[in-house]
Amino acid sequence: MQRVENGLRSRQNSTEEYAMGSPVKDTAVLPPAQRVPPMPVLTSMKDDPDRLAGAAAQEQSRLSAWGATFVCSNACIGAGVLAFPNVFANGGLITTFVLMFLIASLEYLSLDLLVKESQILGVKTYQQVVQKLYGSGLSVFFSCIIFSYMFGALSAYLIIIGDVLTDVASRHIGEDSVYASYSFAVIVWGGALLLPLSLKRNFSDLQFVSFISISSLGYLLVAVCIRSLQGMADKGWHVLEGVNYFPRDFSSLMNAVPVIGFAFVCHLQICEIARELNPYSSFCGGGCCGSGGRPSARERSDSVAGANETTGLLGGAVVINADGKSIRRVRQTMSGVMAGALCVCGVFYGTIGSVAYLSSPQKWVKISDLLQGYGVTDSLMEVGRVALVMNISCSFPINLGPARSALVDIFHRFVPKERVNDGVVSAVTTILIVSGAITVALSVRSLGVVFKIIGGTVGALLIFLLPGLMITSRPRGVPRGRGKRSKLEMAGGVGLLFFGAALFVCTVVSYFT
Image 1 (cartoon, rainbow, N blue to C red):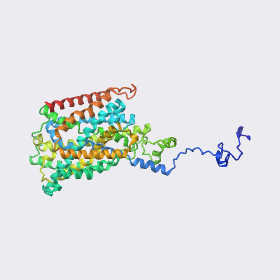
Image 2 (image 1 turned 90 degrees about the vertical axis):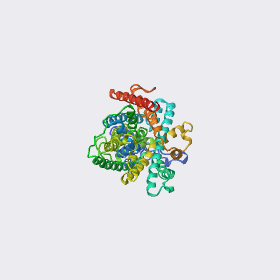
Image 3 (image 1 turned 180 degrees about the vertical axis):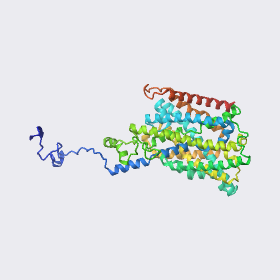
Image 4 (image 1 turned 45 degrees about the vertical axis):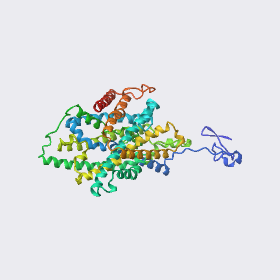
């Protein structure tokens, strides 16, 4: 039946097969054999409390801007701070500060590059960036290098922990006690504390741990300043007496440059930190997001509403920073995260190294370990030793992450991801890495020269040469229009290549001739 209303012809569905004049048949009145399940109706879900709560929980489980800064700082700073009085003694007061600024600037450029490439390519690790740009063969090679580099660092951490805890326990318990033995300290500390922390798979779970790490190092900074000021007072505040402003010779310079070069390194973690960063987080709490106001839980959930409504029917997963605006926010926030982390590290390195050096310039020429410059009966510095152990322990799981992801990537070259449980593989890999680091720490007590060589060669390749190559060259298969570099970026890329090559060559010449 048809009728005309307001000049428009319409069709009135008057049969019982139609419900309330709807063009869709009411299948409830049809025989059972002819009934068809109704089509899903897309709703806005803007007032769905479960969805709002889910969006809020998803945001809380991600890294905040300050949390990312602490994680970055924790990845950069650690046991290397012990060598900075010796760095100032070898490199000279002025030269060391200049090199710190220049190297930190170069490393900021390479960090920014890795964040941009990982966001564009949709990956979360350094080796996955390499795979997308240069192929799987080179990716496996770099995974092996990354694992070796980080595993060596983890073993060194355990050696330092064992040495410090043994000295402290020997003073208070007695050298003959089993609890004061080096092996007891390494095994118990590694198994009871480091392994549980290392089983955490996300950096967002280690935000508070990273804050504890930086706070612990803050105590060491205060303790060193107190002892250094006392030393300056004892010599009548003649702080510049005997101070070298520039390196004495090439050998002295080469003892300083590798340590500075790897004092600001968090390149192997930066892609995953950017991936986990909450795009709506900011340093100022209330603003800095888009139009200037911090979005509510409903506004944050609305950014993924379209994906929920359309891809949810197909089983698609929702990624909070999948849209272009969120990616842009992540890059902007990561710029502040990286700058803040580098500044935090610069303050710790520069303050501890310079004040200790100024108090006793000659003492640090041959002493490469800060704690060895103070007596074992110094209670203030003994607490500083314990604080350092806490700092290294909190840094351990941050630095284990890249080693684990590299080893898992190598494993998946032989066993497809679909055939194994990702959580089980991660847990087993973590246990193997921690057990291996404990074994190395129990077998080898001195790795200083080896790590300097690895740092000046493998580290130069990972931190300077490859990022410089990414900037100055266009990988095969990448369109010319994509990722076009400015003149300033190209100059920075050339600087990375030059410094990385110089560091590599000078390290080889210095240690093998």
